Length: 191
Image (cartoon, rainbow, N blue to C red; front, side):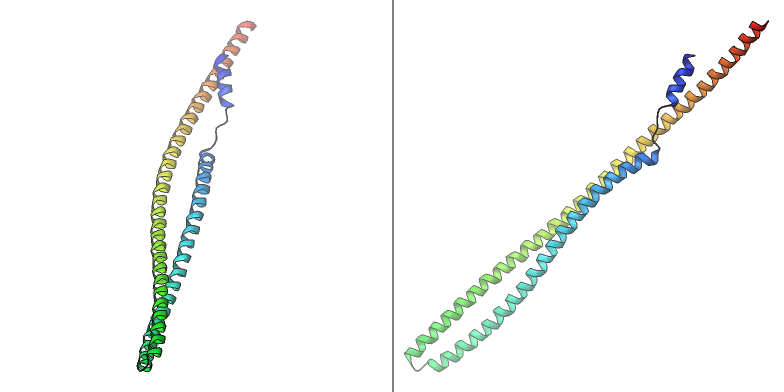
C-alpha cells in the first residue's frame, strides 16, 4: 500500500558513513594548515638568514673599525712626532689625520647602518613569532569549529539512521499486514 511505497523510497536514499564525512573535512583543513605552515617556515628561515648575515657583517665592520682606529691613532702620533720641526711636514700630517678621520667617520656610518639592519631583522623576527602565535590561535579555533561541526554531523547521521530503522520496521509491519490481509482474502475467496 502507500506505507510500503514510502518506506521503500526512504530505504533507497544514500547515507554517507561518518568516517567519509570526517575524512573530507579533515583533508581540506590539513591542506590549508600545511600551506600556511610552509609559508611561515619559509619567512622565518629568510629572517633568520638575514639576521645571521647582518650579525657577521656587523662583527666584521666592528673589528675593522677598531683595527683602523688603532692604526690611525698610532700613525697619527708617529707622524706628529716626526713632523713637528717643519711646517710643511706638519701640513702633511694634518692632511693624513683629516683623511684618517674622514675614513673613520665613513666606517661609523657603515657601522650605524649595520646596526639599523640588525634592529630591523630583530623586529621582523619578533613579528614572525607574533604571526606564528596568531596562526596557532587561529588553527585552534578552526579545530574547535571542526570538532563542533563533526559532532553535529554525527548527531544528524544518527538521527537519519534512527529514522531509517523506524521506516524499515514500519515497512516490515505493513508487509506483514498486507500478507495477512492477502491470506484472509484468499481464504474468504476459497470458501
